Length: 163
Image (tube, rainbow, N blue to C red):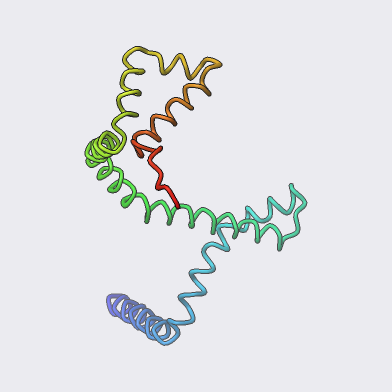
């Protein structure tokens, strides 16, 4: 009895070793077939359901499933690749935004002092919001445009006389 058990264990070991040798030889063939076989077995009921209930041809049902799978993988891959970089850049933007806004304010104040003064006075009096809502908004924009022009060229009437 013990001898039969030992022979059985040895035979099982030899069979497993033989299968491993065969699989190592045909590894390049077995791996793609097994990778393709698992989704085919899992998605077979889905294809049958689409074919039976939705009256879609089998090839179209398989194409729909493949396209949905590719779309989901593409979206997930994009999210996984872009999310860390996007979060990092948003954090950097949050850190540098006050300095950027301050720089813009300094630039606009130095470049257009008259316009800055008019806007500041209008904001303090609340006149800018009311004038933008009223029918006089075009006049107010023209006034601001004239102020902008004056700020860029303080002496516009000094033209060079041509002989």
